[in-house]
Image (tube, rainbow, N blue to C red):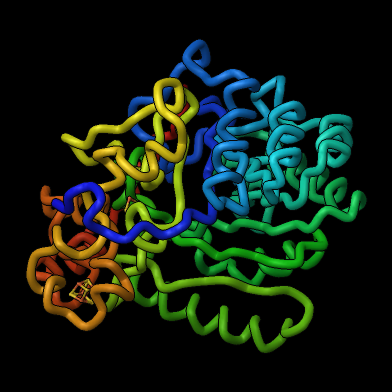
Length: 362
Ligand code: SF4
Ligand code: FES
């Protein structure tokens, strides 16, 4: 592993503020950790305000107010105002369940810059079944209309998997009808709770190919109307994603209780030491936290990454996925076709079943 101070530090650009792990939905693809943090351990608004100030001083430009469901925080408006006052671009990532219309107006007054709403499918019945929450779809439509009515830019997040991947066209049509400027077609990431439902969520190779064709067709058809972001799902890719833009390189993730992680799923890797904003400044954590320095740079890499021309392009892929699939967080992400464990990924992709979802509830 790299030693602190030996790797040139980049400026972090984004901070994911997980305001709470509480969430009314029960999505089977939840990527939050298996051990959720309780309400009584959550940072208060004053501490978040201090963290946002430190983030801005460090060079962070954007804060993503996320969860769980950030609407579960009664002080969400105060927290949003603090991020805005710190000079950060504020993006609210919400399920839409739990944000009332009057709260949205107050958030807009507090300086909220952008909203991302997740949808589970293009039709109410299936969407509510996947979310494990009756009526969620109707609430998403209502909140999206209110966001657009307030002229706040809207992105629709579509998480795709076997049950909905064949309806990307309907979901993009819905995003257009809702007035979104962008739709993000994201395949399930198999971390945290989602790993339990992997076989039930995994699409087939044929579905993935059809989806890629549909995205290309939709991009042409709706050019200039809506931006469609989509990538090949990990288990069907030939090269890995540069996860979080490289470990400890561009982003920080603060959990509800104040632990600072290099990525959303970092706690799934055993043995890492995370520092908390309760005891350290964000600058100290960014510069010196053992977890941030664990996989910075390239010195920690093994072959084939160590001598690969792409090692500073994809940074060896995703550390959490490497650990989940090989038991070694310093291994080459098995998604890479050069990785010794690459064949395991194809076998896992083929291992699909129709078992009922294990829904996530706190
Ligand atoms: Fe990326 Fe490592 Fe694969 Fe090279 S061997 S492409 S650095 S994951
Ligand atoms: Fe942790 Fe990719 S999710 S490095």
